[in-house]
Image: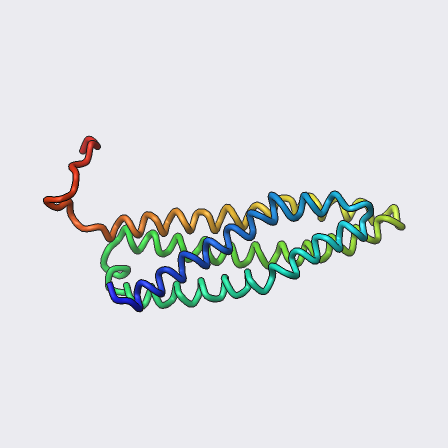
Length: 178
């Protein structure tokens, strides 16, 4: 494996880890912490500030992840074309990555609408139902990105295992029953 290939693969893994970790932190940490604000305006401000700070980092991670994924695909095009398990894993990774991008965009859109609806709900009883519906949708969406990006990490581990050579003289024999 060349230094370039190692750099590209490392970038791909690190950026997916950042994407996964940041979205998980939002679901577990930032969004619940923002609910501790004393009123809707303060809660929205806390969440907005956190996501505004993280947004450019996550955007760069996603962009680099996609670009490095294309570079890996080009580097492994023959293996992807001729090795069925690799082909299936790459197709699954592509679908999951596309889903993660789409789910992240939808979470961003719903989060912005929820912030507006939550502010309106403080003064407009009719807006409370909309805010509740958006909150429920956002709670589901905030877990979708870490689930999909986590699945991509699992597939990356699977693909890495496929590249291991045959057991050699210095390798310990496997205890697994074949």
